[in-house]
Length: 139
Ligand SMILES: C[S@@+](CC[C@H](N)C(=O)[O-])C[C@H]1O[C@@H](n2cnc3c(N)ncnc32)[C@H](O)[C@@H]1O
Image 1 (cartoon, helix red, strand yellow):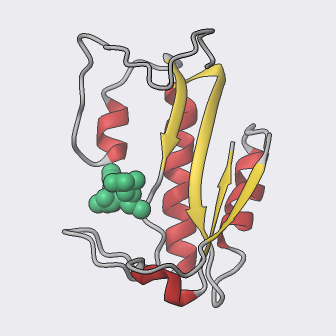
Image 2: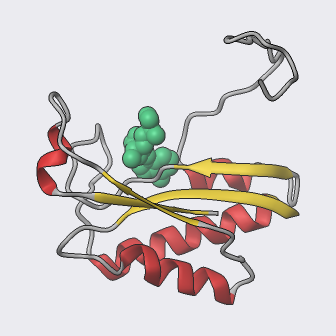
């Protein structure tokens, strides 16, 4: 194990954590600048999925603009040496979305450390697999 033990399961309690539920841009406005070490996010993929209130079928340019604005807000709350794990997806009809966003983020000072392509293969019970979807993550 990473912590040097031979245990298969290690449970650690993290006391006094605060969870905030809300629009990410509004939530980040209330956060201290450059105070966050790590951001991990899985935003909507703009694949017309059925979320509760969120409309997941925006115009492509509008969707990229929104993710760009969210990423800029993330940069504002992250420490200069912080890490940003972004889990986003393209699709067969919109394959450039993740790459266009990454190129824009490069221009505002994000450095791509790694890129992982996750090919979602068909398995019983996974409804999205029928779309031949791939998801991408950058850091
Ligand atoms: C791809 S899903 C991620 C699901 C999450 N990783 C999970 O396992 O539950 C995208 C989520 O982002 C939420 N969402 C959409 N717009 C948002 C916003 N402006 N601020 C915060 N969350 C938002 C959606 O409601 C949805 O739950």
